[in-house]
Length: 150
Image 1: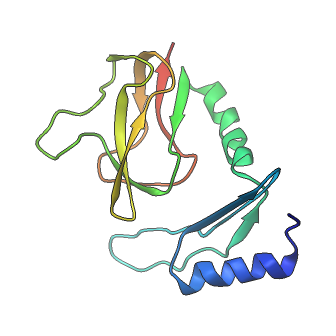
Image 2: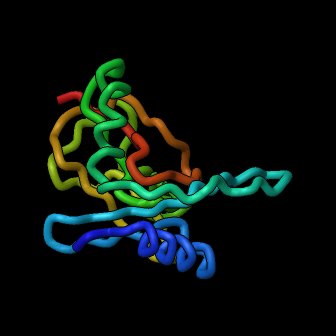
């Protein structure tokens, strides 16, 4: 599939008219992600940044790599835009804490997106060395949630 400018503009219009924050399409070897940055301010509304087309989700992950080199451990990043929750419910213990050892496949948090609770599992085993977001905080696609030292 060849993505031309008219097609990208139509996708951007759909994004805006339906109050979406992201559209991703894949067709064989071709992929496109159009994302609208949304800034949440507690006291005043902030206009959203213009829609920017992206070639594929992979560049966003590689953009995080320089930051990962300055931190200790391997990052676990958000696979989607949503709200970060550190525990299954407000009165429950958090899934992970700094210093806690986790195994590959362990649940590390929940990302709520469009009223769906998505359990995020660790892809590696190790010790949690840093938590980068707070409970209830909005997160972006590719944002580092925590660092794990293998």
